[in-house]
Length: 151
Image (cartoon, rainbow, N blue to C red; front, top):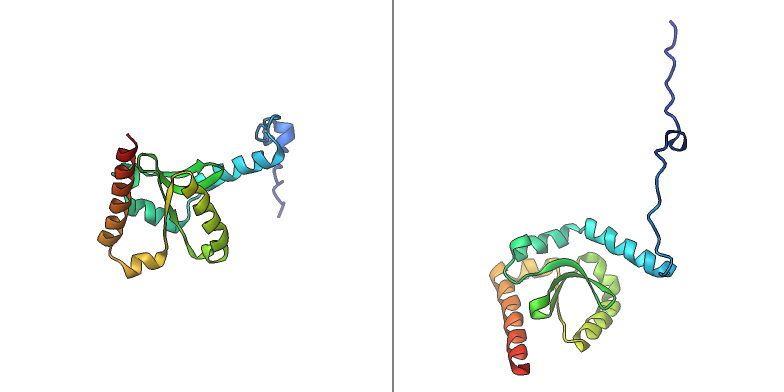
């Protein structure tokens, strides 16, 4: 039995389909480019817990205006409501190892007038969704009162 000749696919270079590297802005250092790529990667790959929290908040139609994966003062936050200066972090199991860095980040954002609420999977076990909504609502009211005092 004669073997059929295996067709060879031309190399990407030969076919003109070579992968084109992302353009690099020469004015940015290597670390900034790495950070920009990380931000892009993070935005396109939310964790399952981040998806759960986003759905809990109401997704794209959430009443507080939370926007997912926002960069604030050099930090990438999970959800940010600019009107209320409120960040919600979806802290999955991996945050056990980063609590010190998380605390420093929270303090840095707090110094700029931005509050952080950290939600864990345990919060969804220990509290009803209504209780969690009430906490978020109260934090938003506090910020509205603070903004009213400034005016």
